[in-house]
Image (tube, rainbow, N blue to C red; front, side, top):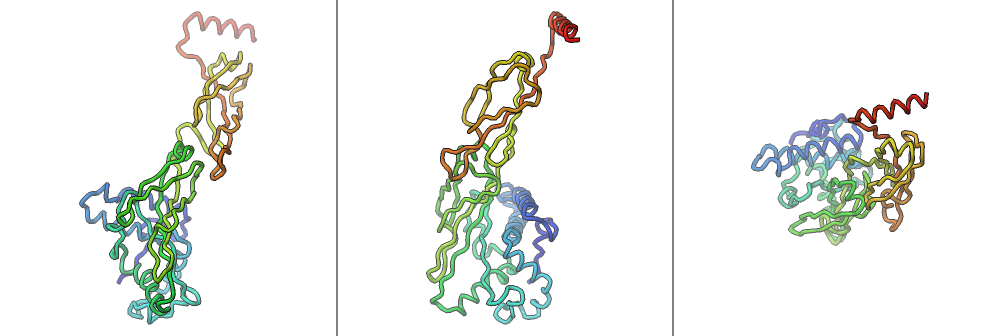
Length: 314
């Protein structure tokens, strides 16, 4: 059984941040996903390694245990690889608490096919699987153990984050629809309780957790529950004043532009930003910055009028 360098598998440094690890995982998972590489055994194996590495490194507790073990791998090998013969407390703390956390899977992929008993390597099973099983045996049949959570990264558009959406997952032959509420943001976690890995000896089942990321938008920039946008306004309206139509995520609104509005001036449209998560009816604001749209393809008569204006102004 060889030592697995999970940092090398994801292509990150040992001190990588959670965000760096998440980005590396998403990039590699998309590249090696079985749907993208059908009937490619090498990509399938690589995909499993990537998910196994992310399973450990995305979980602070598992990552800390893995880092402590890595420095003492030779001593572990000398025990013959049997967790029951080894003093795990020097790495896993007093009492050898069973590792927690959830398996990582990819949307619309059958977990039974991907993460059955052979889904993880022997290295992972020995460190995070067999150890838990050995402790369950030694604890006796009356002790219940909670099942693992299943975690899934999910990307949503800003429109989906605004209105709410759902995702369909196939879990253990079941089709589950998970509702994503309005107002989710980067890093939000949506939990479906009791639908993860079943517990043992009467322990509760784990949960399904969606880790949300929100795609960048071509028009709006989000800051908390507020949205920011740049609105082109024709030169004549900027100078003389008037009305412009603003596109928002819930329809069009009219904005009054005062005469002699300067470039870069901002207007706050209250309640036109993102919904506040789990606070029905509350919204952030939409802040609109106006930018003058200069006329183009002027006729000679129009140019002459601008020359006259320039003379009058100067």
